[in-house]
Structure formats: C-alpha cells, structure tokens
Length: 233
Image (cartoon, rainbow, N blue to C red):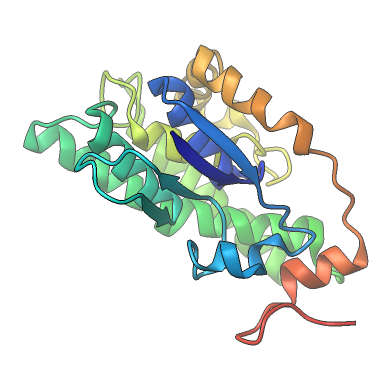
C-alpha cells in the first residue's frame, strides 16, 4: 500500500498517472494547498519543502521500514525502479528517459508554473512577466515538439515516466497562452497520452478535489510563503 499526499495540480497528476498505469494499490491523502495543509507538522515530516506530492510506501523493495519521498521527479523514478515499469534498463534508453524527466522538472514545470502565476493569480498584471513566461513556455513547447518528431513518446517508442512528467504541464496549454495546433508533433503525442486508460483514471481521481475557490486567504497561503511559513492576516 502506498499513501499519496495529493492535490490535483500538474505535479500531483504525475503520480496518479503512474500509480494507475502500474496498477499499484494506493490511498489518496488530500493536501489542500489552499487551506495550508502543506504546513502541518505531520506533512512536513514527509515533505520538508512543504510541497506536494509526497508518498509513503509501506511495502518497499527491501521489505524494511516504510519509505517516504517528496519531489515528483524523485517519486516517479522511485516507483519506476520499484516496479520495473516505464523506465528502460538499457543504458541508452534509460539515459534518454532521465534527460527528459529532468528537463521537465527543471524547465517545463517551473517556467509553466510562473506562466500560470503571472497570467492567472498575480494580484496585478505585469506585462513584462506575462510576456517573459509565455515566450519561454512557447520555446519549451517547441523543444518538445522537435523531440517528438518521428517518435510516439518522448523517449522513443515506449511510454515512460518522461511522458507522465510532462503531460500534466501541457494540459493547461490554453491558460499558458499556447495553441497546440502550432506544435503538431506535440499535439499528436498529447492526444495519445490523453486517451490512455491510466490517464483517464488518474484525472478522474482528482475531480472531487477541484473547484476550490481562490480566496484572499488562499492566495496568501499559496503565494505569501517565507521561511517562517505562510503570510498571516
């Protein structure tokens, strides 16, 4: 059994996509990031960066004490190695998956996240910031589109954790000011992943947690964090 500390964000969806594809038994532990659940001591003991997702695996490969992990990329790699799925063992194929996994966690995710923030959530519209992150998101879409030329999936012919990592960050493409028709290889890949039963099941798991209002208090929790914790008052 795996406990998944989760909220339906792109990083949260990465992990439900893997768990559904692999058929692992898991339980969702909601972490309402707009209510500040990520700052609760029990969660911080698992995820010291006060970010979800995180997991606790009660049956690790060594059959020892439960293992907890934070950071979505690390979780995907751990689960792939635990199950022997969605990560090739051959050195060249494996290195391609890891390259594109880290490309997502170091580039696509952070840049698209800033795009979301300045377009949707910032209390004032800053034209330079909006344009900066929309253009960088566009550039990264172009990188991925070129990579997918002649390939069904990011690392080659097989579906891997590289695809699971990137797909949720392409789902909100309209919010990011991007048009998939401008990226035909990416669009074909996106539809291919979208239609997988594991993807459909993963996104269905998040539906009950959606549509939480963005109140002023929620905004302060999400965007007013310092080393001392979320903004008060």
